[in-house]
Length: 233
Image 1 (spheres, rainbow, N blue to C red):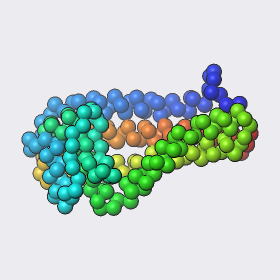
Image 2 (image 1 turned 90 degrees about the vertical axis):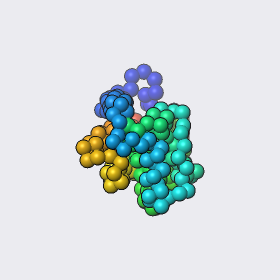
Image 3 (image 1 turned 60 degrees about the vertical axis):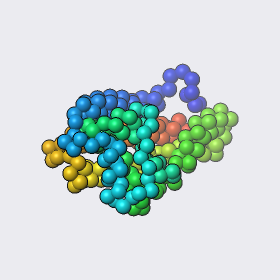
Image 4 (image 1 turned 180 degrees about the vertical axis):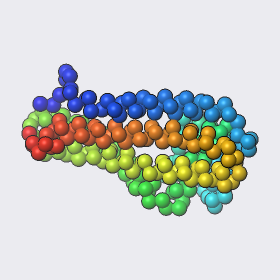
């Protein structure tokens, strides 16, 4: 029986991921806000640094724009736009430079054909479809007693897990590029690298938490469906 109502004991499996997610969110907020108040020695804004890093990498097709959402910074490979939140776009803090360089790192990944980024971009629609279909398929499959439908639901969620796992090397590689670009270009001094790294590491922890949540959810669905123990209801 599918425990959609009442107490679901398999939810205990998600506890480590839930705790890590809460910690990661608090960590990224506190770290970002702390170093948002620490000015960089260069005095350049995040927008200026992003543009210069792109130009120095031979990339002139990417626009740098400001968006209204806090911590919504991202690079869109389809439209070739690097979007920065106001705190990053307008600020010359160490937090702003770290985030701006990280997003510039994604643009550089794109233009240099970094394989994990290409895989993640191609996987976006598959992961979205899997996320939308997984639980409805499982629910109806179990309620109607249709094991093939249950299996399709689990397989659909595998796409979500794969997307989250592919995201990890993409994000860590972008952070590594960011630190190298900032130091190599003289945008931050050696004694400022630790601060920029703390900002990027805190942000990366949110992706680790998301990946752990996806993996544990998959284990949970395998248990619920009976597929993990070889049982096929």
